Length: 434
Ligand SMILES: *[C@@H]1O[C@H](CO)[C@@H](O)[C@H](O)[C@H]1NC(C)=O
Ligand SMILES: *[C@@H]1O[C@H](CO)[C@@H](O)[C@H](O)[C@H]1NC(C)=O
Ligand SMILES: *[C@@H]1O[C@H](CO)[C@@H](O)[C@H](O)[C@H]1NC(C)=O
Image (cartoon, rainbow, N blue to C red; front, side, top):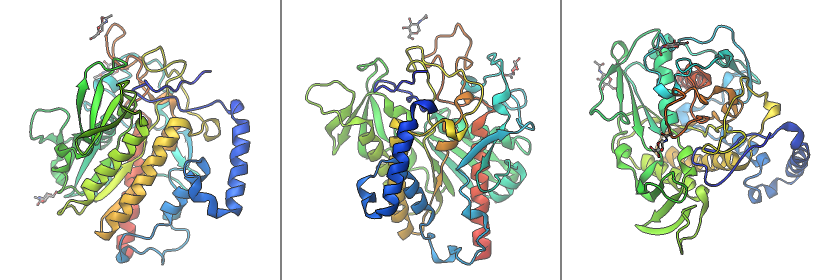
């Protein structure tokens, strides 16, 4: 099985390596972890190794609470907060799914896999089991009680929209939202739950910073984008002040060719193949984009909400890149021992954690809360959850013919609501105890 990872793949690279091929790497990793354990001073020098990933995650967990009345130090040690809900395995759940393509109208065409003839349905029947505790299945009644009178914004790309549509379907057992969008732009929607006075909105910003198409074709015929890495994308930064929760995401668009601008001048690019423009890699742009997005949020005068970074969800193209025959045809999740975060996926994830941590520290000075909706590991294990060729009719001419980026609905992305509700509940417990 050959997994591809090339620079001109605009929709993400492969994610996994078969276990037998990486045993040496694993051994090496164990060695490094051992060395790290006895020489903690080395840690800053090894910022990208997966063992430092563990350390960063631990550090994040032990970050002091954002304000004194949040202090949870007097909670019993069995308190559920001690459990890392994002480390675990997928286990069978015969009760799923909790809606179908016939009961929920909010499913995006290209994620309506059953409509387009996906033959298997086992991919819907799993739930996430954290290693050290249980993660309850999303309870829409409980969720709406918690978010009564509040508002939530999804800021990012189409995977963020995918998450919102999953949530609308899960909530449909209680209530359907009404469309209260300000305009007719499908990329900027607002939904309101009348009985709960709860508003949900999406803001389209695939690069998080201001960007525009520089050349519709570009070196790989997937468009060349100009990214203004130090400029806010005002389409969202001017709109989110009033929101209680913001869920930020971004990733797959950074695989495409980009030209980077700072202070209005070209500083470099990612695979632009322009003369005299240095290739700074996608990672350069990715880091700066998150830094600028968080800076925008932390700079808002009126904003009093909680910011969730929904971490990168890897794609699963195998046997080729997205436009060269790559596909995702598996029908079962991986066990955690069968796949590991590496290469580009690991790098993107690390950049997110690092920029998140800086932003969290900055936000704390202003009393803002930053939370990690850390979906990366769970989604790495779901090569079976994508539309593949069942996102459209076979004869249809669509850019992403085999979609191994988005997630079928119903499907594994429904679990993000399980995570999110659990995070809100833990937050509620903390403020109730204080
Ligand atoms: C739902 O999927 C079924 C196949 O399982 C299909 O026949 C039907 O047309 C779909 N309905 C909608 C509304 O997409
Ligand atoms: C609904 O919630 C908003 C905040 O999201 C609040 O400003 C408004 O007063 C609420 N309306 C009612 C009728 O409770
Ligand atoms: C598909 O669409 C692209 C651009 O829209 C076009 O160049 C191509 O010829 C089309 N292919 C087919 C088989 O229709």
